[in-house]
Image 1: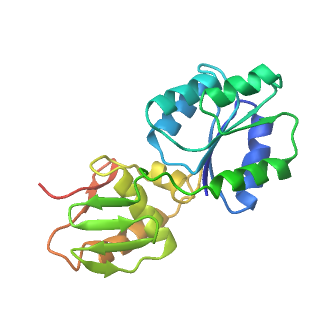
Image 2: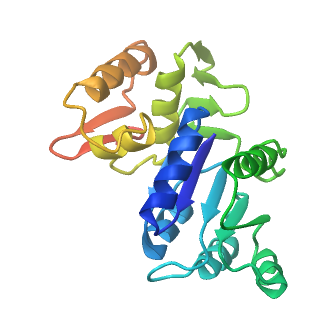
Length: 225
């Protein structure tokens, strides 16, 4: 699963992120309320873990804001605020679960997995379309102009990320972080290599290119014109 951790305590954030990654999850981390809100509102996650006490924007406000914007991603509050009223306030704000610090990672993992097993809401977008390209997120299938395109898992994630940001420029750094979960530059051409492979499958067999290089900025998936 793709999980967002919004936590300002570096030790706690590292502990949670490392444990989740060891379980095979892709983890993004935000250390401030503002950064957490921007990620939660603009990216697609399977579960969000958020502290209530954060610099800038508190966790309660983050959840209220994203719920007001229509974001239905399951949210777990992870906090020292242990009172009954605190728990009720968190759940009424739109949280799905509430875990008090200190906590056992095994319990957090069990709660994350339980939320991840929930069936998607009926109005959640399950198919992405850009021009004649269609990406089925449930069946993990890709087709263009009715022709099936076979992609490797990493190629699928790359195309999905581009499609979720269709018409916008996606930088190399964004791709490294959200497709490869690298929070540093590995000093390799891994992005360029996978873009090339994706173009060979998605663009070259067809009349029009959808994957465009934006010189000096990154890449963009959009119909020509």
